[in-house]
Length: 251
Length: 246
Image (cartoon, rainbow over all chains, first blue to last red; front, side):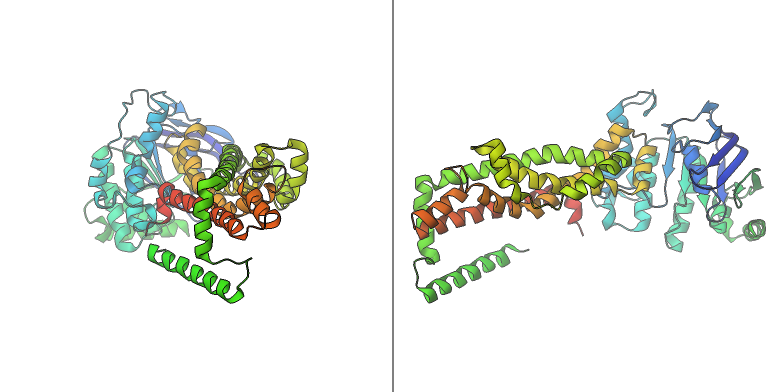
């Protein structure tokens, strides 16, 4: 589904983070991208989202070169990206409003899109109906992130990109949201790429883990983690072994 | 702020005024009751015409400045290149006290409403322009990127992000400058007009020596300023309720 073809990305006044980098991800896979600060994790995600363009080479999604954000890709950022002046419900419905604004033009909105504004099933699914009338400033970090998830899933994406989505949350909230993401991944048959600097998070969420090192990155380093997503995985010896392996690879 | 507290504050001010009037015992400081009586009589006569003339000038200049400054601020706030180009110009013009242009504007625009509207417009324009520009430029990149990832192009970003983000900035600018606007209106109405509260106050105070009428004019001008201030406050709570939500 995702294919990076000899991709090079250089910052305008900075280092080259990817050089002739090629990588592929299949539909329905759950990927975690792990690496230290400054390794290009977020840049990779922005490239996959179509928010940045490669210096050379290309990003292909379903065989199509990516030149702008794709209507079927959902992006969830670390800082939620919620509108502070809109209620939870209005934030969740924002993507649909944007689609209704353009109509099914095939560029901003899928061509087969039918206008709708009902996000209540998602708010209910994510336990947000009770706070639907509140503003982002009035709810907890976990609820804000759930709102961002609801907003993205209301657009029925087939590819979900997440940039350190749970890094500012406390441990129990983080774990419950990780479980939720795994559940949604299974339920919606989503292809998922989650960027994180946390070894534990990568081990819990990524069935495939892409390691990035100090730039420039030339060769993808991929670690298989086939048991990720299984029930109580984070309490098994296999999980601890995976964390050790990832830590050793990062060092 | 509670209504009761506001009422108490009004009563305290009136009481202080009454005490001062009793203490001075001079025609240049009549008691609030005398002024109230004159206010009612004068409103029945021609004070309301002066009030309406002033109100029209403030409203027209306010609407004009919002109509021109808000889009300009939004465009500058969105485009770093344009902002870099215009920033030095705004930087130089913004702090100049616009009231000094009253004679110049009068010379160019002559008598009538136009020069009065123009001078208030100048004050509000820069205030709104700068606040809206800074608000639009200060929107976090993550917010813009995440809305772009929902499919929003430039038009949708404008409609769903920049425009709603600029509304509180417009109202803040108005709240900050409505007092100055009314003060400058007074100055502007001293020249080349026979309508407006500035003219009315000045005429009664310095030519007719009708002090209670002069105070009635001052009360009318204060009500105009307060009314505008309260309107902006009310609008802010309606337009930007999230700023008050706790």
